[in-house]
Length: 427
Image 1: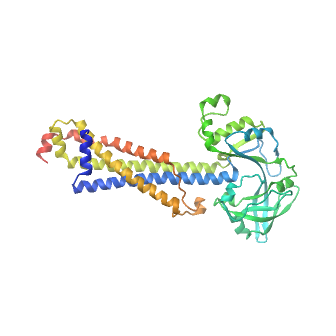
Image 2: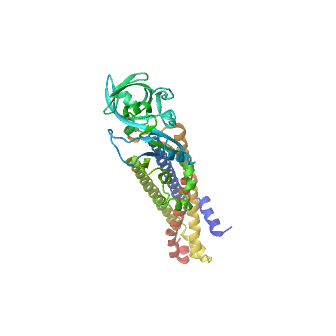
Image 3: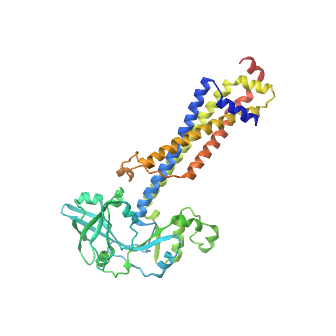
């Protein structure tokens, strides 16, 4: 066995000195807590980002296709559902669904009051997976009927403000259009915790809004495109760049890859917009959360380095006589330094093992029992979400070991100043 490794192991695992043992224990504990903190931060921030993205995408899909010319509530140019380009988009293997929608501003009124809302008209082919997951009461509306349905899905905040319950009737007044008002029936109540959407969005039958606009059945405001993001990975290759020279740059975002290809397919008067541009303030806010994580990672690494530097200095001073004897026996400074670097490596490794048990254990309990709750009005979610980002966990483990170990060369420079004669004589 290599002598520095052998000697370092004896110092770490067979030392009986109480002072150094206490310091070493505290250093190992600090490494463990630092690693656990980093893993918990990475997991919670990623989980938080994923949950918020799911909610935003649930309301607006990954990509929306509409007229390139913007409109207001009184002048809207419809798109046609029989557009040939839509079949080409549906044929893309990473596209999960393409469905039309109709938007219309209105005033939802009950006996208790009124609220300005935005009605989103959808058909029975609409992907109800998201609203099924956030449904609090009632059921998903049924639009698979010959005639247009008056069933609507409203939010819990709208229901509280207007004192509406499942089965209640209400009226929607429109500011413009062929029909001034429409009676609707509440069949479902959803809640996402995102006030920007909950206070505004009402889901209704698309045919109702088409009548308001005086449109045909094949005319809609736009189309929602849902993606299977995992299937986009292979499209992000340099080999595909020549096919889309004006759109493909660097594949930083998976959605941008899909937008580039869809823009290449759709007519010139169509425009595809990713959800990140429709609600930029939300996604910019999510990106800002990553800066906090970087700050935590850097601070925890600094804490680990400082603690281990202190340990190595104490061990060096405490074992000055041992260092003198090793030098007297002919061991060069570099080899003695390596002994203490291996010493630090074993301590860091021990701290990493304990830290993984601690950090992953806390995350498992949160994922299982949801004991850490949040204020939904501030954070849009009720419990802290956990994301098992194993790749990032591995990088944090490896990075902590490498960075902390490399920095141990600095405190071991003290060894070069220790002379064998003085070390042995005055120890």
